Length: 632
Image 1 (cartoon, rainbow, N blue to C red):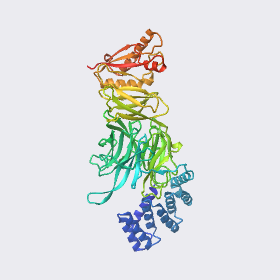
Image 2: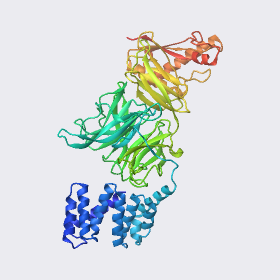
Image 3: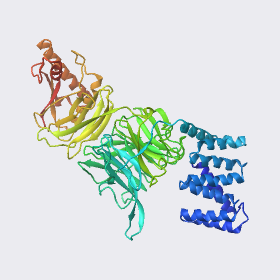
Image 4: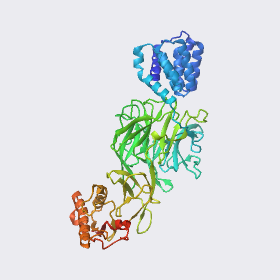
């Protein structure tokens, strides 16, 4: 949308270089030329006004003044300045188009459409067709507002400029980038970006926002932060850092109890010699969305994504970067991506898609294959305004949205504040339920940091991965209300743990057994048809986990033991339990594990772990166990 004013600036510059002006006043020209060399905006505007005072028909001075007002957000002054030029040259199609643009940027959409329609040259109007479409779209959005009124978030919003809000999926912690004045060593004041945090109070409000841990904020600029869906990772951008690969790089820190680890540069290819910002981890934990001006995109700033590998110690390794492409990215700017915990609903800001003016917030859907299943939709007015709206995030439940705007409250003491809305139904993600989890050592009870993975049992698709907290062993999973999910937990020196998640919202507890001779684990999420020994496809994820465990622990030898309930003949149950154990062994051997490392036996119903008089008890007795019998 800034293209038309770029044309304006270019024309002004060309006129200056060629010394061709539409005024004969030497004093006006002198002030105009001085304005072109002015350092401060205030000085430039004062000089341009002096040039106009010397010649009230000096259109180039008006154009330059209007551009300055646009760049500083003084849209009302921009309109009044353009109206003066319009009165001087009402038949000039370029002036008409600039007048329409000024009305559009000031939120006067009907006036923008009406003025645009007065363009007389069919050829000129055809070239400007995209702008006319944009004005009509804005007018339609304005005349059909969503029934929502954004509210300034007290406590989170400070007396400074606040933007790029980020909220943990459980809604308990919100973070912002704050642009605040600080004093340098010489006692001079300058503006600096820092990361602030605020916490949800028992009454539903928020604590006063305060700077985050000192090891994250530095004397340089940090901001554009975001949390992973489980709150375990914080990503942010640091500029002018000695460790940077480019001008601004993406960093991350790992939550450890109530503190954050020292920040780490995410590295190549997430960071390049170019500019990177606005990181946002996908809820699955294996992708990171971000913004970059690196080559290979469609526009100036594009949204990219990079694959993420979570190592067993919790550190991250990026690989395979690629732009999202159309229809999300355009030839202009897209930024501030946010993927909701449902793994499908995607929000971002753009000035390239049709909207209300400046940058607007859009929503689209991205399926599991990475394809855009619903094209970008404008969230509408009054969520979006003629100003800039950006950094839209949504709580895990999918009901509340938070973002920054510089136009919703004209009486705000600062330019940018954080606002909250009740999300309109069409823009809401799937409802997610919060499942807290904990990992601990079964022999000592001590909490463990471990790799946690949640997978869809119907498709074996990995739904989520992260690490548990080093200090507390805690982790958080957000799951849809409907669906069948399993989870596995792995840590070096321990048997891997797997279990079915009975219901989204239930607590998840994993007691890891140290790898010692005699250690036993039940292989959950291993499925057979009734009275059959063929492993069902929904079991492939857990087979992969057991394979990876044996592949990592090359000296471990195991015995697979099958068990049944007491329904049926004893001999038949003994044979069925043995054949099921053999089926699991064969699946592991087929993947590359030596048969010499695996023994099998069937115990039938001889070793129940629950009461066979109930269906729940019988289900627990129908199991396959893995026992460590040798570590050499």
